[in-house]
Length: 439
Ligand code: ASP
Image (cartoon, rainbow, N blue to C red; front, side, top):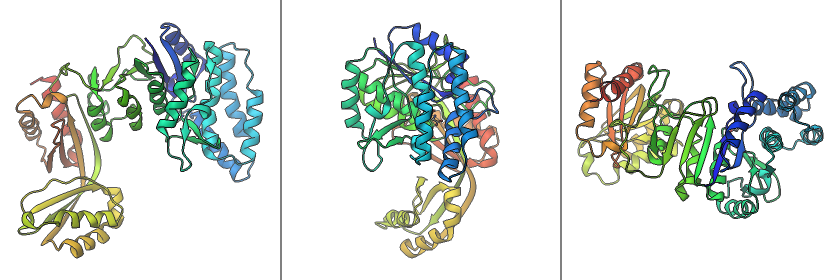
């Protein structure tokens, strides 16, 4: 058994948190490769070290003094080293970093030092080997992550190393220029390391006990999702459910390695399992609900639309010309609706409308703003009759007017459009019918 364990910033924010992590790693000898984030917030008003580094580097880049900010970063690490009673000194590392800040080594380099330094401390604390991610995670000359070269280099490196710490969030180009993933990218590193190590499990330790069935800001104490497939997770994450970085699924998905989301503060909780496929039925007909506010619909009408070849293409061309991606496109015989993000669309609205008029000549165009989309996701929906019926009767009882319905062809999700102001009520109604009433 071989496990890769990734710890998020809140799990490593202080010496006290490091000790919890140490206990978790030492409790299971198969936890062989550790991927740390940079220290996160110790309390709600605190600042993440990554943000401190970005701020400090911005000063250096503008040739302002950054010594105070730099000292505050040093203090964060020293507090951890002292709290763990380590003999380690990062003085030399900080000298190099300060010099490189002065030489304007780039904001990616600056931000990556958060994980780099935390990795050195973690390796010292655990007695594991330290592998610099810049040596094993490769980006191409355009700054795109190079998955195959990385996998080659990293798997060879790990073959020789039984226990190691590999800092998250960054890698380097061939010429050694440091490059980071987008924010939250240590999740991606964990997944890359899991693939290269051919791990049995990728454990992702954070400050929640896994994914919840619905947003806890809307539903009081929602149930935890015990098991979810990669595909279901993708649908939910896309609609705003966030625990894991979106790109973290791809490397492990290739190898069918399950991800287990766990809580560093309550390690006995089973967390959520994310798997490729499963014969296990979900506890409820639905696996989860997620949603987002802030959409607009552009409703088009044209007589005989259905028989006009190329109508859809021409309409979408108008959106493409304005660099707007669309979310959904339900259609009727003579009508077609395009759903877009309101904030992307609002400044370009008239340009899109004139583009549609010019290219597709519809009879009528109407725009409706302030819509919310809700995704009801579940692999069990395919085999259970009446799911859509239950959703819509629940919404009708809650007095919610449904503006749009779209069922994905995989029967994995049903997307519902409602007014922004009905969003919370709608989610509650759907949660109640499937989870509370368990109908
Ligand atoms: N430290 C980085 C961030 O704050 C990466 C991570 O934590 O995954 O985004």
